[in-house]
Amino acid sequence: MKLALFDNYRVGIVDGDQLADVTDAIEGHDPAWPYPFVPRMIASFDRVRPKIEAMLPRARRVPISQVKLRPPVPTPLNIVAAASNYKAHSAEMKQFIGAGRFGTEMSGTRGDSFASALPSVANRPEGMRGDVFLKSATSIIGPGDTILLPDTVPGNEIHHEGEFACVIGREAYRVARKDAIDYVFGYLGLMDITVRGGGDRSRRKSYKGFAPIGPWIALKDEITDPTDVKVRLWVNDDLRQDAHTGDLIESLAEVIEFASHTHPLMPGDLVTTGSPA
Ligand code: MN
Image (cartoon, rainbow, N blue to C red; front, side):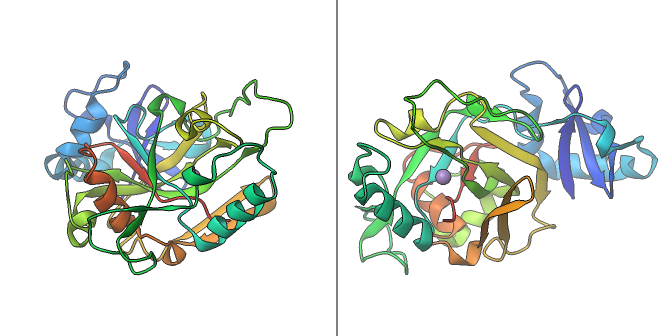
């Protein structure tokens, strides 16, 4: 099942090139900010799903091409992002930073590992974990929306980072990697748009429009193995990123484990796994 929000934050299930409008199955649906029906729907989806399925055969269909798709989670409490989590990207960043391409970017904030008392990860040095950071939830935009380029120092590069992300389904606090995927509601694409250069990473990645997400949430029946997903990003017809989640240094489950040992992840929160080269 693929779950979309569209037009006035109606709830649709993807059916080929159409959406089935199942909004009436959603208890307490209210299309006004801050859209509290979304995390509630996610948290209670075991109860909601049978209602959606009952409504599906007779639900009104609309062509996807004729609706305005909305970000499928418009107001998460947290966007947790893994930094430099593919070997190729890590190496590339070290090379560019070493060459001074991104100005005064602090080497200690990128591509490095941090000591952790959590169990080790196969692809990291013993006792070390990769970094995660928070990105502003108000940087979220939906499919087809416009990324506004901010007023930065001339010459500062702004990069697209196409990433595999998940939506958390229930409160996750201090969860082990073996249980982590049980806390996932579904998956989506996220672009972690980034200003390269010096200064705090959360600010450089949190400008308005810097978190396009979507186009919908693929629930876990659609993606049964999050370690076997292709991640590709095009600019017009130019394929710029082409990766596979099997090449992540830390898997999604390991990122959730690490992040959830800092603070609780709540229903509707987004966890994104990091950019390929
Ligand atoms: Mn990123």
